[in-house]
Image 1 (tube, rainbow, N blue to C red):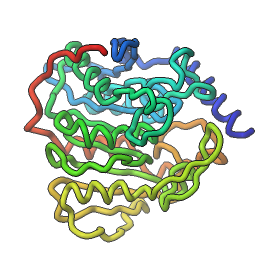
Image 2: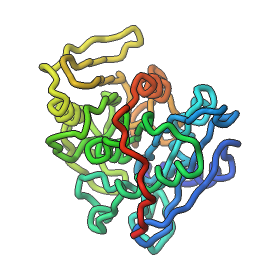
Image 3: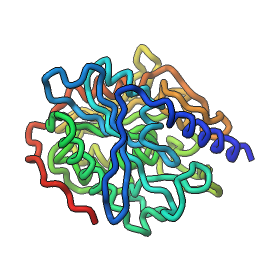
Image 4: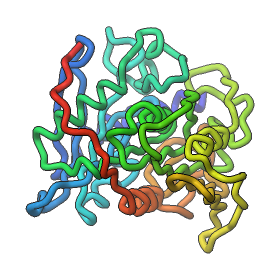
Length: 321
């Protein structure tokens, strides 16, 4: 099948990419829930330059790795140019007995949807990411008031979950093409959100409905903007905002009257892809690409406007479980 060949191609690109790390990349391993887990860090060229660094948590989509989302979104180049750390953890594979493979044993996050082996095993990915941040803080000078999270697809849903359950350690989030599966009723503080999606996404359709699953069968998905509607209620926003088209041809919705910023950007003609990023998968599987928007630049510019001054005190190292 076409999607099988496409995922095999992605697997091959992952293997090739493992030998093409950026000079600022480093790999670290930590114990969590009785297993050893991995994360990648890209430190900006030139180091900290005597200051604490902002942190962007970058969460890959299903079948990916931390290293793959750094490449996918050109995060290393942006990190070097603007001076922030990129921290990209790996999700667990479906079957822990075997190596992660995009085709046969994909990684994914326990994003609150209740789906898949990650939910059945009760994988504590929120705790894991907190442990990653504690470990990063021991290795690099970080600015705890400027920790942000973004992610794609499964990683976007995990980003939403972090926003709901981990907001006391985050200054802003930016999910791309993924759902908020939880139904939070309160937030520790008003957390700003930039949400980006494409209107030609076959896997997470903007209007919801049946969608193919790359690993077989079909899923029924809610409308993507149901997620931002949930967040709008948490931020006490006014009514649904008008749909404006900006000079780039993006449909932009800026909610008014909120306790924190809530932006939605819909990219015309974009499939299930990172806007402006690198993606080897074919249109027939994930829909068309688009360079109308450089999502990583857009997200970083959004993050750079925000800091969380009520950030929690540094935590003790989380105990492996």
